[in-house]
Image 1 (spheres, rainbow, N blue to C red):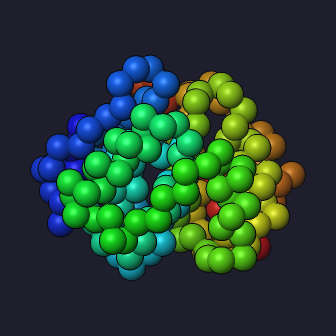
Image 2: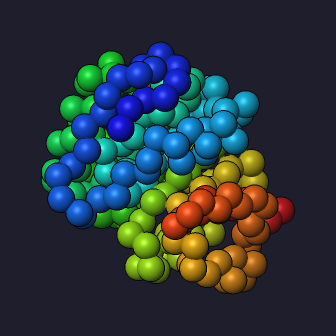
Length: 184
């Protein structure tokens, strides 16, 4: 796994050992960033369930001014910190080593994110729980984009009742990116 473009282009990234994390492949990451690259420069990027940090690091490398990483797995945190040091992007990063719900609570009232990317364990229902929190949160506004990496069978039928709508979707073989915005 590597950084695809930007200031840290071609630098290899470490991934945690074991099956507790599922890194986003380079090809899927490249497709995702090709879709959002025009609005990424100067943005604040929130990487939830960040694992090795590959997605947030890609955002920083491509011009995001800040990335906030929320992760509680100790092996993944070690890997994330090493990757930020290796890419020399640690100075633009904030790491919250907590459970996702605690991490979101810590951010409440402190900043607004332009992009929120989450890659929770598939079929865990965690994306819905996070979206429930975000629906009442000051972390997002009407301009924020939430991107969920999910299994192809994951249902998002509840979005409207939370005040969200899906405005774009990109399907891959085994998963997809769902782009969600807050209804105005």
